[in-house]
Length: 261
Image (cartoon, rainbow, N blue to C red; front, side, top):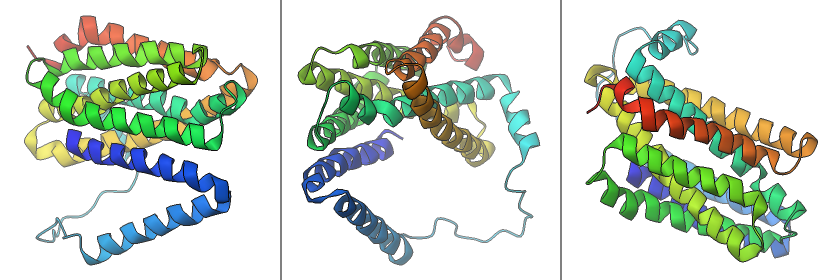
């Protein structure tokens, strides 16, 4: 899980940096470049990526949106709790990612290139977090402890993002933010896989990803709305509030709820 997220993080290193430099040639060039990379990914997937399903199944498929299955999964104590925790974490992070550039423009008066560099810094810290740091911590601590640590990093960085005293401090805070996210996402997925029976791994992880996708929709919507109508700090404080709730819950209750010693 960490390696997959690290690959995504490396994309966040190169993508924003390239976008920041290309911004001098106009926004359209950035869009065309992004579309070109997406087309390359399409070709690689179509022509090279091997099929994972070796044998076709004759079983009937379920409907695309099975709300009964969703509710049944969420009512299962250990699994439901971890999925809800993952949903809240994803919402809080996407809430920030949706407004971070706006904060850079409006409050810190940054250029497109400077914002691109900040996202590149985030990618570097995220890649380090999801390869070296998480590998180090996972050999010494349980998932619940790592989740608590990651939530602490996220909480501090969310509070400091709109209250930094300059570009350098904002860069450091952004790095701490992605250290936290880099620990939380793969660790939460690892914890979910541990509390899920082997024969339900695909279904449960699929439901978790569906709900996290919903969180990625709701997060930027709330972030943009609250940024405009309630103040520039509000999206970050909202994220900090939810992450604080996760931190308290993980410290005092999560281990008992998921049944791990």
